[in-house]
Image (cartoon, rainbow, N blue to C red; front, side, top):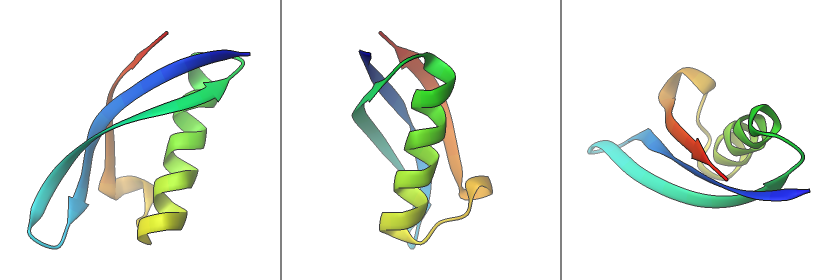
Length: 57
């Protein structure tokens, strides 16, 4: 599995907040899914409140 850097923004109480996170996944699509699941779980967000701007290996 490779390590991917996922960047984007999520909707916080005071507007949109940017983020950058490292995810270990077999491919870019799985890295995106793990990021959405992680932010949804940790911050109580729906997928529509998270915008992924890029996934880099």
